[in-house]
Image (cartoon, rainbow, N blue to C red; front, top):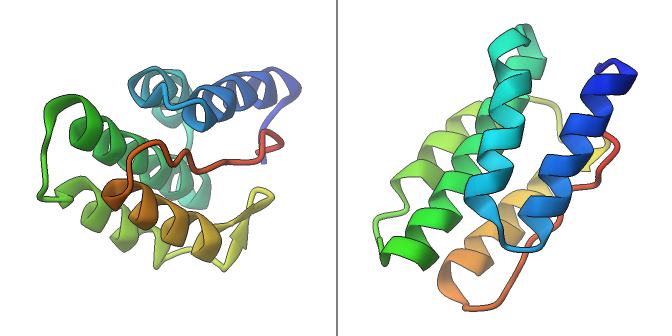
Length: 111
C-alpha cells in the first residue's frame, strides 16, 4: 500500500488524529493523498474528510457534519478493512466523536 517513507508519514498523521490534532493530521495525510491513486486515494480522502469534520466541529462549532457525510461516500467504495483500519469501527467512532466532547477516534499507524 505505502512505501516505508509513506508509512512513516501516515503514522504521523494517525498519531495526530488520535490526539485530537485533526487539522495537523489532515495536513500530514494530504501529502500522501496528492501522490496516491485508486483505493489508496479514496482511503486517504476519507481520512482527510473525517479529520476536517472533527476539526470543524470542535474548533469552529460546526454542527452540519458535511465533511463526515462526504467521507462516508469514499468509505462506501472501500472494503470493510483497508490499510489495517476497520473502516466501520472508525466511522462509528468519528460519528460518536462529532457528538461527544473529548472523544478521540484512533487510526492504526500501519497504513
